Length: 453
Image (cartoon, rainbow, N blue to C red; front, side, top):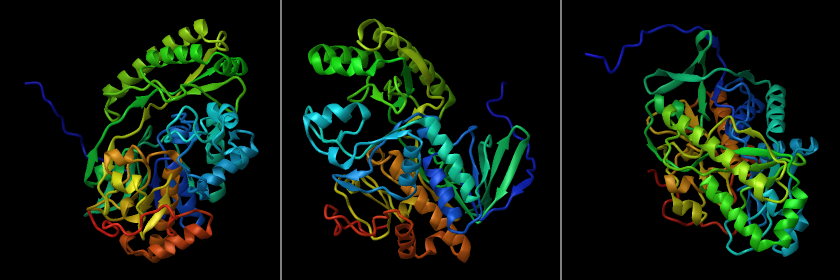
């Protein structure tokens, strides 16, 4: 009989590092977590499977930072804003100035192709908001600069393999490298994997959701002035061409191509593809292949039919598949769609998004100790996660998790025992907005305020 499973022999792993905090995943949330923990006195190791930092902001090429304002109030600050400031100095971040963040035909035409629109609003033209277009290589550079300056031990080419456990407590991680397994021991581990890899293998409960995936791509040699003039001068013809482009792509957001800080280079957050499991190698392989097929067909169409795209070339396809939702942990509190949509405020809020609040309890996986999560896999209902998974709010979660980990490591206390009000005060003193002060639009008296789910 052909076996369906085989045993894997036990082995040993050298302990290569003993920091206070290990962060798994060097995407936006992981960067923020590692930098915040180090700046607050912890020794930190950051492990990342790819040869670069940046996660979905770089390898996934999600090149607009949004979900950072509630009307005119900027809700995500701290390390996320520091990243924007550094990119702007390099000439690799573009966003509308305050005077342009209004609803008008003039600002709509000026900024819509930068993605700086309030896409939650209805209507042919939408308000312009604070939203930032950036360059992925710039993101990688700034990420490495911040890690180096903070004194974080960075270990690239180090895929997470399994947690090190003492009972239900996570005490470190094993990475499986080209030279074999390597162990890192720590007081606190922060799971910023995006897929709850650490929490899942540590036995924490979770639910698995799904959403569309994309193979984001960039086109070069585009005459963007001609393309935008055609939009203005021939709106009906432009609409029909855009509709055909979206059909070829299998779906896209309102604008299937957007400007970037690089002249003549546009990025395309498409094609939209459903029915793929973002965890299984088979589905990911199939999605990558199908995405590339659609991109090739789209490029042929754009060259032949779309003014400004006659000489377009394919610059690149994102090396990371654009996965939006997989495992979502079950934590001490599970954020609901109602919480997000109605702006429910929590007394233990440590991060904000567009108008919503993330409680510290949503970063604490049930049935585990010594482990925090930060990123799109936090404790949230699947429908709520679709509204609260953008990069800046994930960075805010990471910053909060990093400071919480440093506090716990310094005091040798459990993560559930730290003083959340002190965490909030520290975040605010360091330029972040933890959401401890509810906005006028927040709902503060709902019955789920301190319920444990």
